[in-house]
Length: 499
Image: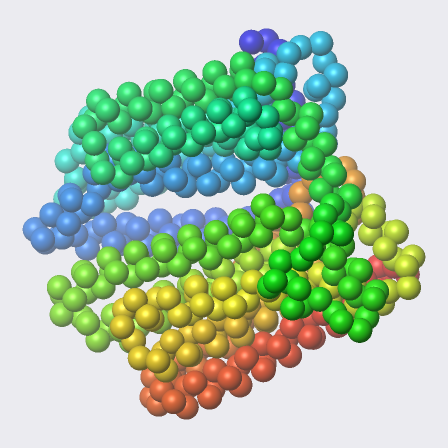
C-alpha cells in the first residue's frame, strides 16, 4: 500500500497544482463562483421554507427518500468522476513515469483510484453539508431512516470507484478479459442504480453497494494491465489522426467539399482526428440523454402545476423555459466546447499545419464543418421532442426546431472564435485551453441565446405564425454569427502565427 499511496500523492499533487495555477490567475472567477453558490443555497433554503403546509410537508416527505437521495448522489458523482478520470488520469502525460517504477500496474491504478475517491468524497461532503443546512431551515423535516446517511456515502464511494476500472476496461475491450470485466461492471451498476431508483429494501441497497465497491477495487488492483495502451491511445488521438481514408458516414459525406481538394483533405483529417465512431456515438447519446431528462422533468413539473390549477403558466412559461434549457445544454456541449478544444487538440502538429498553403479562415472552417452534421439531430431533440410530447401545435414545434438550429450555428461561431483565440499549445498541459474560459463562455452563450430567442418566443406567443417567420430570421442571424466567428478565429490564428 505504500507504493499506491505514493502514486496517489503524485496524482493528487499534480491536480492541486493545476487547480491553483488556474484559479490564482482568475480571482474574479472565484468571486463569481462563490456568489453563485451563496445564491443557490439561499434559493434552496427558500424552497425548503415554502413547505409550511401539511400538503407541502407530505410532498417533501415522499420525495426525499433514502433511495432517491442516494440515486442523485450516485449519478452526479459518477458523471463527474467519468469526466475527471478521462481528463486528469487517462490523458495525463506526467503520469507516464509511474509505469517505469519497479511496481505492478495494479498498485499504480490503486493509487489513481484513491486519488479519485478522495476528491469525489470531498465534493460529496460539501454537498451533504449544504443539504443539511437546507433541511435545518425547513420547518418540516423528512423522516429519513438512520441508514440514509451511510447509504448516500456508500453510493458516493461506489460512484467514485467505478469510473477508473470502467473506462480502462472500455479502452481495452478488444481483449476477451476486458470484455468480461466491462460487462460485469455495467451489470452491477445497472442493478445497483435500479435498486436505488425503485427504493428497494435498505439491506438490499447496502449489500449491492458494497458488492459494486468491492468489485471496482478488486478489478482496479488485480485486473489485466491497460494503462500503457490507454495513455498511448490518448497521445495518438491528440497528435495522429486515424481513419482519414475510411468512407465517411452519410451525414458527413453531404458536408464534404466537392470542388476543393485541399478542403476535402482537411475535412477527412478532422474527421479522423476529432470524430471517430466512439465520439460520434457519445454526441448522439448526449442528445438522447438531454431530451429524455427534459421530457421527464417537464412532465413531473406539469403534473404538479396541473393539480394546482396553473396549467396556463405551465404551457406558456415552464415548457418554453425547458425547451430553452435543452437547446442551451445540447448546443453548448455539442457545438461550442468541441471547438474550444479544436486547435488545442492539434498539439505540436498545429505548427506543421501552419506551413501548408491553407488560409486560417479555411482551417477554422474545416473545424466547424463536421459539427454541422449533428445540427439536424440536435434541432429535433431540443426543439421538437418536448413540444410534441406536451401536445403543442405545429407552430410551436417549428419555432423550437428553427430556434435550436439558430442557436446551434451561433454557438459554433462562439466556439470557433474562442478556440482559435485562446488555444493551449503548451505540451506540458493536458487540459483544454482554460476551464475558466469555459466558465465565461457558459455565461456568454446563455446571454446570446436569450438575445436570439426571447423576441421569437414573445412574438410566437402573440401570433404563432409570425413567430415562425421570426424564427426563420433568427436562423439567418445564427448563420451570420457562425460566419463571423470563423472569420474572427482565422484572424486570431494569423496573429498567433506572426507572434
